[in-house]
Image 1 (cartoon, rainbow, N blue to C red):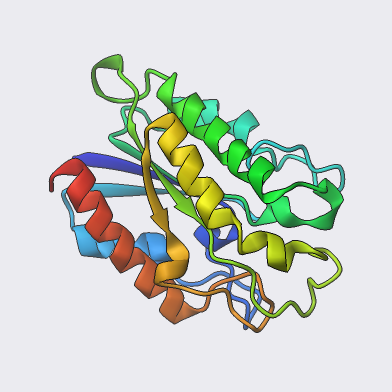
Image 2: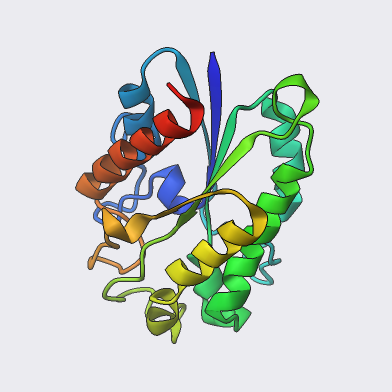
Length: 209
């Protein structure tokens, strides 16, 4: 059985911008990924609303992606692949981060995985770094993400550079999906479907499935 960990935020958890509830399991991109890859793969969902890459949230708390990553890897090992899609919450005004710093935070998570023994034979698992799509039309989250729209458009190139720096696989999700204009942050159902199918093709290549 191939073990794939999907480590992300509310867009991995499956937040529906239309209802503010969670998409059904088979509607989330992770569920689409599971269905596309089939029963020989086990997709592990580790999505947390508000999760950042490496930053402590002074308001929400317990959202630092680096703090939980090692326990998460240890819990689910042995892993063949870790897919990381984080950075959207780092664009909140409260963090005052540049696109470069956000990408470096994502790179630090790749480094944690690379230095772990949570793959097969006590080796590190492979890593696929996903650049989140740029923010859409901000509505209810406009003040929270003030200044984030332009910043989000620069994430992809910085994430690509981080992936090259750390020697992991990379995919720009904005080539297949866009953030919903309902709230500017989350994904609609069709985008979950598109992302799941696109990531499935990349996973097949990486793991030679």
